[in-house]
Amino acid sequence: MASNAFTVDVEDWFHICGVDDRLPREQWDHYQSRVVLTTRLLLEDLAATGQRGTFLIVGWVARRFPRLIEEIAAAGHEVGLHSFWHRRVYDLTPAAFREDLRDNLAALRDVGVAAPRSFRAPEWSLNQRAPWAPAILVEEGVCLDASRAPVARVGSPGYPHRPYPMATPAGPLLEVPPMVGRLAGQPVPLGWGWGLRKAEPADVLEAIAALNRQGDPAVLTVHPWEIDPDPPHVRLPAPLAFAHYYKLSGFRARLRTVLSGAEFGPLCELPDARRWLAARPD
Image 1 (tube, rainbow, N blue to C red):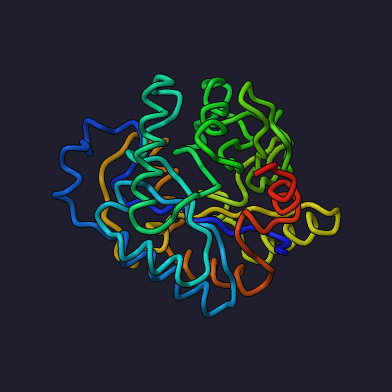
Image 2: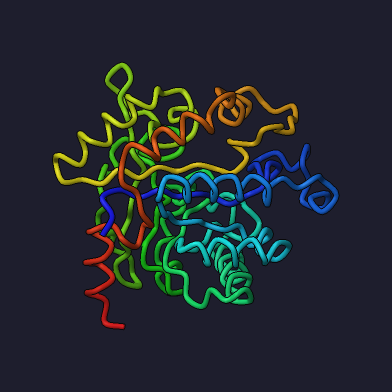
């Protein structure tokens, strides 16, 4: 049973939402992929620190690099879902979201992952703008969702900060939110993105310990491209450029310090998740 969860959104450096004009899907096969190299670096760091986690896979990656998914599973990590085409959920219709999810499931099934239980939407986009989406996840067999960030812009500050059951017309879903900090009295990213990259490892570990003392897990999230030793760059709108490139330098070393200083495991091994999965009728 894990005190905290470490999660990886396995996507390539060009899987950026909302910039189809700059990084069109039709060109993805022609870009220099970095996802195998950078994911293997994360696997090395997890092995070196004795940690396991949940790797949430973009279906496009699974189709092109099936051996990588096999390596992740063979190392003892949970394999979950991160959509097929890496599109925001609220930009899709319910039918298109279901199709994308089924394609993601099929891509993982073809490399031996029969029934993934965990899902994260690209850019935390399974939020109040897509109220119909949680029911589709339940209908397609997903048990754990990690898509609702309790911060403004990508989610809502009103979302709970610890795992909680979310009711849907198809049945309940366990929501597992990422770790947040506070800035000027407002919740901000701390367990992911620019917040995690900016923070000193000691501050991250202190926040994790504080959550654990009150009986709550910390959930961290990274992307393989964040530890790329030679990251490709593309001109992006200012908010996206900040989110994508801020404080990349030295992040791998800072992250490894965090991994060495706390206990992490897959989403499915968090205490709340284990109880949730054990109570399921199937």
